[in-house]
Image (cartoon, rainbow, N blue to C red; front, side):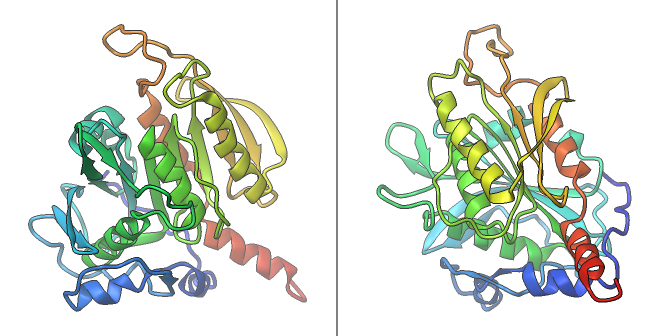
Length: 318
């Protein structure tokens, strides 16, 4: 995680991401000390934390709509404020805490480039359950989109982020939320990695790469919900080109390419039915899924750079 990030954004491409890739107005509210509220993304650069000293200790909570929300923030041991970092925000499921999923997602040790990880806590409900939304909400306006916006704003203010490498991860209810978020905040997220997650459909904004795992034998989140998420991302990304089967971290997956080869959709219908303890539980997070997600994220081309090249090629004389 301490290795240097390669320069992936050309000078010509940098104004592009400044114009289309940003964070929410909550950044201004956070900077003034006011609590964050839901807001649409505004063109505020994610790299504003570069060159600033990192907070000590790392943020462990944030206030959103008057409610304090716990965070686990993991920063590389040898963090450098002059080096852009990827950001992975990982959402837990209905019955697992953020501390639990930090252990079993097993993401951090597989980062090959400097990466900051944040594990927010859902709202605790009766019966040791958690939620990311309120009853009756639609995919366009889930309650904790505001939490994501506020966390992203806080991280952008506190650390040096690479605006082309903002990722969401989730399992089960967290997978559903991460997929829904990728649709609603596609102009900010670069990619999503989810396992056993459905999606709340909305009018997707922007496009994201997607790596989706689902076990056909899952009875807690039916396989059909995973297929629905896959088909949503395929349609929105126009990922019609079936690139055939591919192996990703030992998982047999199908790779669907988009026309620009920037935002693929990779579908992995795994059949690892037994948990690490040998129990039959097709809904579990199989060993290797976290490593596969990190490898997928780090394999993606810089979307803004690719867009810039396409625009230059299409320009007169290009």
